Length: 356
Image 1 (cartoon, helix red, strand yellow):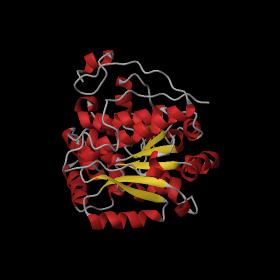
Image 2 (image 1 turned 120 degrees about the horizontal axis):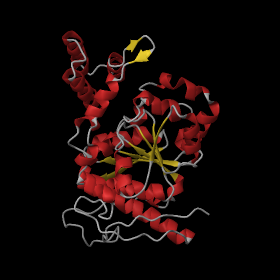
Image 3 (image 1 turned 60 degrees about the horizontal axis):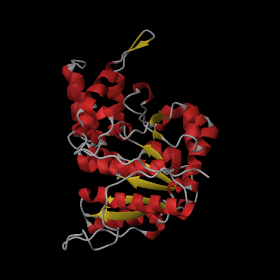
């Protein structure tokens, strides 16, 4: 039986107790069908909403449009585009044309071939956009990442549509090494899908630290799509586990996600997945809930504000992980460590290097 690792969290009131909850606001109750899941039964899907909550100062993390604008600005700063080209890209962006195509064209423009050699200007622009992410992470966002890491160390799998490595950075400061995977490494992806690489994050669009693995359209994954063993193992996850979507308002519309999961899986309404969203507009919330049911996804409100998500998800992670420990009777003791004001353990030498 696999051991369960419990990550120490701050002491808080019991999840559903009245203590600690203001008179004007009561915490959302946890849905029974979700909180009774075991961590190894879950696949956490991390979207742009999580990254933008962790580092709100970085516009490129908030949306596709924000990322493309940041890449375009970097390209202009490095004088990589002619004025007419820059104006054309800016116009397409403002008109909200197909952003995947705009991004693809911009990447191609920043990666011209000279003979057999491809330029690395795109890599330079990516590093400019995502520079010093660890210095831009905010306290509340780190609480959210801590809960994700807690579930990972208890057996949950994690995949993301994001290009950033915020989760990996946070985990490193907690003394846990997470590997960043992309779909071009078929062997490792197969092992991840077979649950042999739990402490790995699958970036289905790629990660900025490996620009050659960044792909924006399913056609770019031809090798993976032709590898029926890899594809079948990935798709089996959607049929046998519960996906929990965090900060993923548009992920189910993502063409790559659809190709990997939705289009290949039959009888989706028989499945039980979960999407945590903000309940700002009642009408829109009900519409989303109805639309997701035929995809086997239960839409759950974590609160009325983005700031409600970290606390809600922390209660959820604690509930799941504590139940795993009680039912399995196993788990490693956690070494206590004081946290500094930013939420990183003070015993880590890396903190002194980065002043986090």
